[in-house]
Length: 182
Image (cartoon, rainbow, N blue to C red; front, side, top):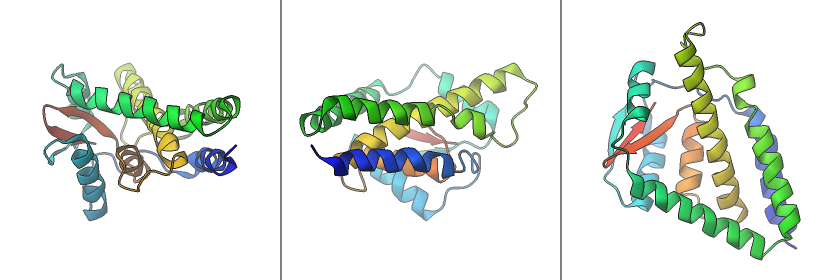
């Protein structure tokens, strides 16, 4: 059993509450953020076109667009399954799944602890999309845990996406070959 891998998941789980989620949605991206986006795009073999979403209404339009890149989604799903397989192959499956369950439970609390700036709390539509944002962050935490626990490089797609969330942004869908970030 590889306790180091499980410890990495536990550490990530305990750090979730320390992140100030969504603090920079709609704000400019700096050079470090651009590097994470480039890493992500490079690993998915897409152009580095970036659409910097500034407002909630625009973000809602982007994530509801039917023209999202399904190939990128499939690549992420395949990578997630691959990393989980590696993790289970090298560790006790019950312990791996238990640690990942704890991570999922903790990351699902993101919406309880963090509100997104400038959200119209009395508008049900914005409340719904704030939950969508939190769900996307929770999924990303799970993906990042798999990448970190299996000792992937720091420029791995899941680690790069996690760093975007950690920096307070919300990476939205890839539409055609354009990376959208809020």
